[in-house]
Every structure is written in C-alpha cells, then in structure tokens.
Amino acid sequence: MNVFQAMTLNGSVIDSTNANFLATATPDNVAFSGWGIRGGAGTSPLVVSNFGAWFENNEHIVWTQEIDVNNEGATQPEGSDKGGIGLAVHTGSTYSPDTAITVRRMKGAGSGPGFLRGVVIEGARDVGLRIIAMDKTTYPGLQPAAPGAITALQVARSSDTAARFTLNESGKMTWGAGVVGADVTLSRTAPSVLTVSGSINDTAVWADFVPECQAASGDIAEFKAMGRYNRMGQRVFFTVNLRIARNGSGAGAIRCSLPVAANTALIQTASGRAATVKGKALIGTLAGEAMEIVDYSGDYPGANGVILALSGSYEAR
Image (tube, rainbow, N blue to C red; front, side, top):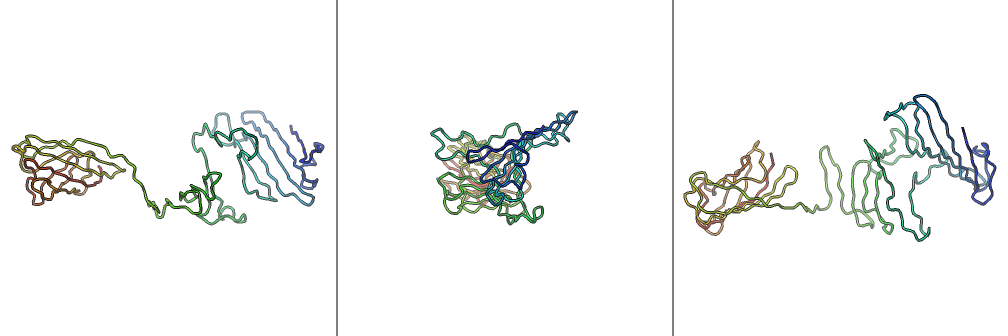
C-alpha cells in the first residue's frame, strides 16, 4: 500500500498525485511529503515508512531529503539482531544540507521551557552512538575533510562563540572557555601515548593509613606511626612518620608496612630524614608489603624522641 500527500507553503493545497513527486515538478515554493507502507508475509516481514520532501523554486530543486523509519526485516528473522534501521536520514543527490538532523527549540516559539533532554537513546546493547567520519578512501568524490579535522562531538552554550568541548575522529579532545581557541587538549600522539597540552589539576584524595612498624631486632617500647598515600593507577605516592618516644631494645633496622604492596621486579626506594634528634638522612627499601628503614650509613635509625619521616613514590604490585 502506498499513500501520498502534497502540500504547499503558501496556503494552496496541491492535488495528491504521484506525479508531484517527480523531479520535473516545479511549482513555486512547494514542499511535498509522502508516506509509503509496504508489508510482507512469512518469518521475515518487511515494514517501512518513508517521508520524502522536495523544496523547489521556479527554476530547480534546491533541497531534497528522505527520512526512513523502518524495520527492514527481509534479512531479519524474529529475535535476530541482524538487519534493520530505526531512523535513517538520506540526503538527496542534488543538494547536501548543512545539517543531517537538528533537534532545536526555536527562539520566540512561545514561553514554554526548552527540552529537558535533547536526544535519549535507551535499550542499546552494543553501541549507543556511532559516528563514522567521511574520508576519501570510501567517499572520494564528496569532498571529505582531511584526517584529524572532522569533529565528531561539539559542546557549547548558546551564547558561546566557540565550542567548550570537542572530540574529533582521531580521538583528540579539546576544552575551552567558549571563546576563540581551546586552552587544553588531550590526544594520542603515538602508539600507547596520550599527550596533554595544558596542566592537570590532580584532585585525587590522599588517604590516611597506619603503618605497622617493628624493629628487626628487639622491641620498640613506645611509638606512634602515621601515613598518607595517593594512588593513581599503578603509581603510589606516600609519606610515613614514625615518632619513637622510647626506643627500648630496638636495633638493626625498622620495618613499616606499605599502603599498597610494591612491585619487586626492581629495587625501589624512598628517602627521608631523622628529625629532632639525630638529623641523619634515611633510606627506605621497598620490599613487597613493607619498607625497611636504615640511616644513610646502613645503621639503625631509631632513638628516644626521634621522628623518622620518609616520602616517595613507587610502582604497585
């Protein structure tokens, strides 16, 4: 079954005829629209509804476009994921419009609020939004943009003169203040390499932890251990303070637990200072779950009233 309808933009209704859809029709300022419903039987039905429009002037067609809302089931058995398109926009061969699909709340279109949501995609099980950039390999005659110059996503306020965020087909992201030019970019500059232009403000929260400390020989009579750390992927930044009130029989070296186990493929170290008493430089050697602390000469660093302060970063296991 096919149903056709024609209409004008100047108030006069044109007869609904199939001829009005031909490219030879040249009435002044006329928009034609049509719907086609085609059905089939069996396990692979074909159901398609189409809307076609031609905007013309007295000389030639200036815009043509087709929108299909369809379920092309000729290759789609019931329950299958294969075949079919929910909404397709096809531009005509005589003119390529600036924008394929626009969802817009027009200025001066009443006092009601704008859209709460512009586009909602629900129910996708694989890809929610797919953007394929046109390149000269597959579209050699349609003037494709140079690689890296095609913007896949652009975000701005209505009052901005430039985009605040963009994403191009190469994966490059840019951020700006809505005026000319971006001030921060993130892009893939080589295999396995991301490069940032601008600064990164690290807002990762530093967390407290309580190191478990003990002497390699004997016992530390009275102490208090405190620590803080920040983990970014496999990198751990940490600080440990060990306040020894009474050293007791502690000797040899001091072992303090780490917030995250260290990788032992290579020797990793931290550095610090014995404050308030000896003032000597400290070396911490990271070995899996703990760090072993000695002074710069390899001697025991503890004493009554000393504060052992060490900081460093290391690769987590």
